[in-house]
Image 1 (cartoon, rainbow, N blue to C red):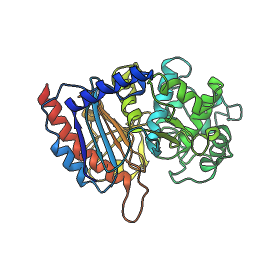
Image 2: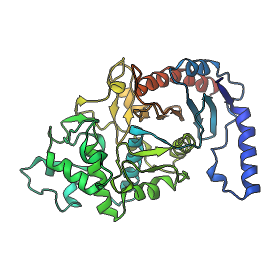
Image 3: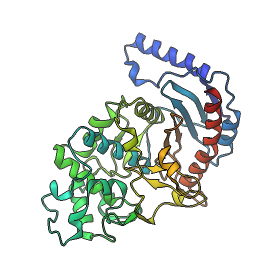
Image 4: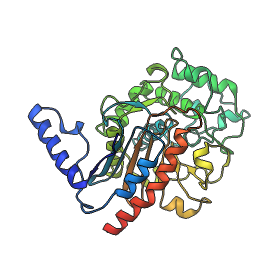
Length: 368
């Protein structure tokens, strides 16, 4: 199918029409996409179009925006903006935001430890499991090093967040807390169990109350896999392209996170990278980790990457939300592809993200 591209002036007309239609139908305007920006009205996006067309996917939607609204939207093939898809590890950004909100609201602290909330967790100072902090759990440096392909409770619909956390606890640690980064599901599942005890609410409900509703997201964005009672905090969410865009715009507007500097801070500067996905550690990329998202860097990670970060959270099926904090724009690459043959959706999606980022940067810089 041909690529359909909506640049800013067309989007402005569409957004105005959508809001008018909402008023006529009685539907809340907040359920629609953010209003479009008119800042780069004369900007050509054909180079971005071409990069998307060349990507090895049949169905993609790409949205680029700022606090002014959507600058660019492109649908290749068929990926409806309001249809919900499983977003795999893009869920990690949602969990990072959930805990950032809990910390900023004073419900929890980054220095909290599992034994503060879980009565079955050891308090023995001789046991290194008693040294783990909430910050380390969200930064994947807690030492609970089950791999991303872990089986067992993390895929068990009949389990619960608390029972699954206990299963990881009983397996023990592979490294000391703070020593190494290890990409896997155990860290966030333990953190989710802590949050449930801290608030008395199920994790999927907690996400909806702390992040989804304040950002104006639809009910389609929620943690449901493998089940609501055992929501996989590191990869069990589904969302829509429009909800992803709305959330990222809300973040840039300061509606979700108060301290953006702290939210984007590299939490792995002193850790050894034991296991990280191929998308973040090869092909000229050296990405570090904040609380639930990558801090991107081309080549060797430097202080400049940490000071003016691009943060992102790619998922295994190709879904990528990202924010360029220096230039103040966000991007969403919405893809739903299963790995098959030689195709690795996450890797190819990151390649597309890396290809279009400098194109977007040049357009925004020229408009300043």
